[in-house]
Every structure is written in C-alpha cells, then in structure tokens.
Image 1 (cartoon, helix red, strand yellow):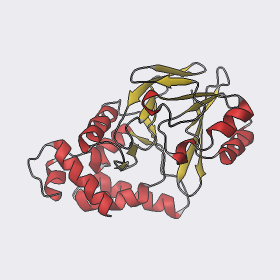
Image 2 (cartoon, one colour; image 1 turned 45 degrees about the horizontal axis):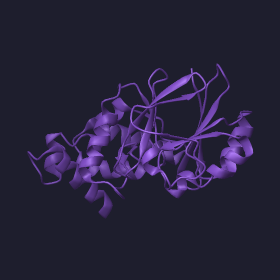
Image 3 (tube, helix red, strand yellow; image 1 turned 120 degrees about the horizontal axis):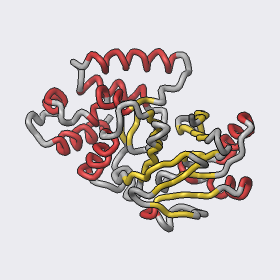
Length: 254
C-alpha cells in the first residue's frame, strides 16, 4: 500500500508526500514551499524522486526549483500550463499515465480553477490528488474557467469509485461546512459531518482525507442535481450547471 505524509505549508496549504514502499520512490503533490517539504522528508527518512504539479499558482509551484536542485526530482506538470510552471521534465494531459515507482496514476483534466488544472488518480491505491478543484465540502474559485467547465470537471471526479481517498490542496473544510449548511440544511449526513469537522478543527486535527462517496453525500457543489439544493439557490428545476454556478457565486460573496 502507498504511504502518505500530510502536513501544512503556511497557514492552510496542505503538503502531501506519497511513497511507494516497493521501490522507495517518493512524490510531493505540488510544491508550494521547499523548506516544509524538505523537513517532512527528513522526518520520514525519505528521498524525493518526483514532483507532481496540479496547476500553476504560486502557492503550488514556488518550491519546485529548490527541491529539484536538492533532490534531482523529476517534475511532472499539466501541458496546458506550459510556460507558467518552472523546471518541468514532463508535460502531461488527460489520460496520460504517471508513475511514482510502482504506483500508477491516470491524469484527469479538471479545468475551472485554472485553465490547465489536472488531478492525479491512482486507481489501485484508491487515491486522488485533486489540487484546488475539489475540496472537502467545497470547490475552487473560478479564476480562469467557466462554471460549465468546473461542473464538468467536478462531475468527472464525482464519478470515481466511492472509496477513493481524496487529498485536496487546502484546509478550508470548516468554512466550507458552514457554507454547505446554508444550502443543504435538511441533509442529516451533512449536519453530522459538519459537527465532526468542528470537533476536528477545535482539536487542531486535519479534516482530510475525505472520500468521493462522502463528498457525493455532503458537498453541495457535487449535489447541484439535488432538488433541495436547487431550490435553496432559487433555481428549482434548473440545469445542474446553473445551480452549481449560483452556488459558486454565493460562496464568492461569502
């Protein structure tokens, strides 16, 4: 089984290390800052071999060059972000295979947060690294894509097996839970999960990994087909993409 180390970079960026125990290969998912990633590697006694980039934003790429210089790691990044990410060795697109030792991932194109955003799905390990596309009970802001593009991207991720463990880019879960309760108030699974998130954060604990199944049940951005959620945004009977767009705009307003 794959080994995972989860830690914070800055105030709310998640750092994630993935290790293949068969070969000892180790990947960092994104590289927002070199020092905390290097510290996590040292603490685990691991050596970095790969940097898997989801998108070009600075809080996901600023540490790439320092880490590559120190460890000689191979950098993999979305081809649609060519010219916006430094020191890349391999540009990848939808359905390309990426390996970390013996662990194999499929690239999923997930435009919306940015135009070139991708996710890495390791089906055998039941792992998804989705950057800033899907969050626990939330989704990323639409800086470069349209609501229709983001809804299509989220729908791809929602179609993955329910037991897929999801690692996202930020610890936003508490604020996402409070928002979700405003638009899906009659969902008992959401209420229970929101209460659990309150407890976890009060104890200083992380709220991920989540799972695709849990997100389907409690994430309003994946529940845009639900009649109650559509009614809550004033769009009863509307297309799911329109309901999603209204939810995202409401989240933008706070």
